[in-house]
Each structure stands twice: as structure tokens, then as C-alpha cells.
Picture 1 (cartoon, rainbow, N blue to C red):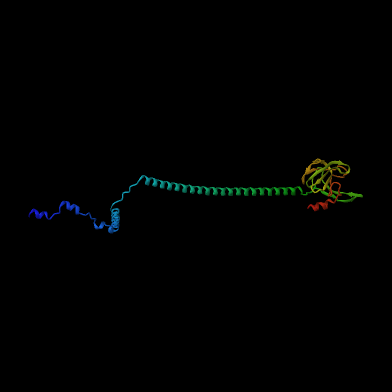
Picture 2 (picture 1 turned 135 degrees about the horizontal axis):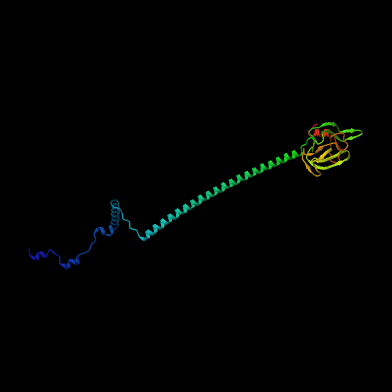
Length: 267
């Protein structure tokens, strides 16, 4: 082949460069730009999914990420601590309320016991006072053993103001109830005699006594010994002359037998 024919097959260097145009692939032209970007995204997504399924993904953290994570952990810890503190406070408050309720119940029970004890003590005191009052206001006979020898009424032209109970000299004589000794002396016909004013205002008189066991102003109880029977004054044998004056020392005497019966006593 001749050189002339070979050279006819090629372009000249200068012409070749001048006439060449730079053209883009069709896929990179504006008409295909969006579909190509979508396809690239799909490829990357698929590739990422494939890589995630085939190999563990290595995460890279930054100081900002670490600070954020640490802040979140701290917040969680703070929230947990606050919750625990609130629960503890609630528990403490419940325990405190329970303790106060128990203390209030204990105090109420103690007050109830004290009130009951006080009530019982007051009732016992009232009972004792009532028993003491009844004991003090009890009526008894002026002698234990005696012989009834003379009654109340007119005798030898004048009033015999009491009853006569005969007994040996020195036989104990008793106050018929509680009272105060008004007199303890020797007076003419009555001999040695004692006057007692009792709690209801009644005055009793004991005549012809041999001796005294009490003194003026002394408080006496029912059945307390006043002295012993005798034969002093105008007397014809040892005996007790017993008088009763419901109206007091200056009151009119009454029949002791009827008066003693009104007190539940009899000769």
C-alpha cells in the first residue's frame, strides 16, 4: 500500500483537534439528570442495606455526641434520684403520719384509762363517804344489857322525862349516834350526867353515871363509850336515866321508846 493512500485514511492532527467536539453521555444530559440522581440514591440505599445485613456498622462518635449522651445519662440519673427522693419523702411522711396516729391513739387510750381511773376513784370516794355518812348517822342502843324499870311520863306528881334502864355499876354506856359532847358534869338529882348533841340536832342525856369517858367538846361516834352506869344523884339503885330531846338542849323531851322505834331500835 502506497503512502498516499494510507495518509488519505487519517485526519490531519490539526484538523482533528479543531473539529473534535466534547459531548456528554446521554445519561448525563439535563433530560436524564433527575432519573440518574434517583437511581444513584437507590443504589446507595441498596448498597447500605446490603452492607448492614452483611457486616456490622461501625459508628463513629464525636465529642459533641459523647457530651450529649453523658448529659442524657445525667438527666436520667437526676430524674431517678429525684423520684427515689420523692418516694422516700412520701414513705417518711406516711410513716410520720402513722406514728402520729399511733401516738394520738395511745394518748387517747391513756386519757381514757385516766378518766376511767378518776371516775372509779370518785365513785369509790363517794361510796366511802356515803358509807361513812351512814355509819356516822347510824343509831344504836345506849346500853347492851339492862332491865327496863320505869317509863316516860308522870311520876310522883311530876314528869319523868326519860326511861330507866337498870344495870350494875360500871356497865358501859354508849352514844346513840355521832355527835358532840355538850356537857359532862354533876348536877343535883341527875348526878353525874352527859349531854350529847347529835348530827340531826337531837340531844340525848345520860344520868346517874359512875364515871365519864369523854369530855366537853369531844366528837363521838355511834356506839362510842361515854362512861359507866352508876347510882349518883337521886337514885335508888344503879341504873341509867336516858332522855331524848329532838328540839335540842332546850327542847321538850319525848318518850325514848317511841323515838328509838322510829330509828329501827326497840327495848
